[in-house]
Amino acid sequence: MRTMKAAVFVKPGQIVLDEKPVPEVGPGQALVKITTTTICGTDVHILKGEYPVKPGLTIGHEPVGVIAELGVGVTGYQLGQRVIVGAITPCGQCYACLDNHSSQCGGHGTGGWKAIGGWKFGNTIDGTQAEYVLVPDAVANLEPIPDDLTDEQVLMCPDIMSTGFSGAENGKVKIGDTVVIFAQGPIGLCATAGAKLRGATRIIAVDGINERLAISRRMGADVTINFREKDPIEEIMKITDGKGVDVAIEALGTQQTFESCLRVLKPGGVLSSLGVYSGKLTLPADTIAAGLADQTIITTLCPGGKERMRRLLNVVASGRVDLKPLVTHRFKLDDIEAAYDLFANQRDGVLKIAITP
Image (cartoon, rainbow, N blue to C red; front, side, top):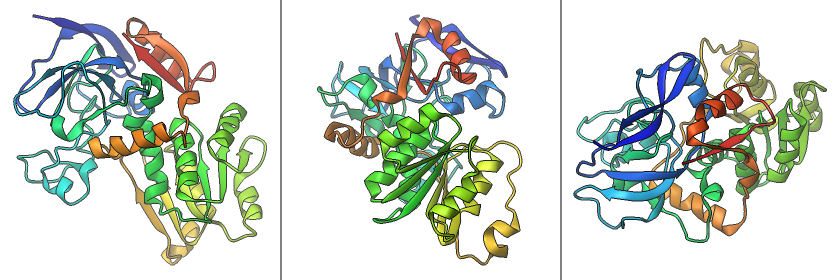
């Protein structure tokens, strides 16, 4: 039996590098040898026990690699071909997928929907922080990488880029809009870039770390606010002459940032929520004019599937967005426990960590 190294969830507070069998490939599946992956904030939620997964599960959902094996029925691909796979792996056949809600995929054969069901890697099946990952519904999810793009150039596509961009897309950002993004971590930075691509002409970025705010300007922010130095709500209302913003994007997942988005949102505006919340989230009546402000609150799970990945690769290849600065640290898979310690504790200015074999 072949074995491989994998980052395994043991219990809250403990993810360890362990040996597991290399997955066997079934019909419709593909085995991908991982060349680069990374750690996500959602993985930290799992580590802390804020999001439950079963013990023994391989964590991670952001794969870049090469095809090692193809199952029966998987056509149009070649062994050794470089590919990415979205963090969300829809089946493309269930009611949710066919109703254009593929992130909520119930899986073909189930005939139904499942909340966040499209997120399988590192949630319901073994994930990508390993030497190999088994890709379900491979024809719907494998996307070849152009030869002239490096692993690090495309590393954000499976999740961070797709999620951040979707904040601007589902927020219906229009040409000439004023947009605020609360939190400038990796997802918030991608939301900033996405708002610029959508045509926003005044983009306000809020964070408490000046180094991240500097990167947000490179991503397209016109105004940056350090909430440790100024009250962002007062500043934003001043900037907008008391009107509020057209779109507010929440990219952290806390009560404070969610509520701040509402407090700067104009009547008729859109709050686009990307954060992963834990515990109770409240909706103060005064922030929504007692429910009469014609505002929209929309939540989004990262879009996946090969067509989404193809479009994101096109953006990277065009040079319109450069996300390489988000990779601030590099670790080998053998040292992934140290990488988790760094990332979970947000030391040394970490944004994203490239994990390689």
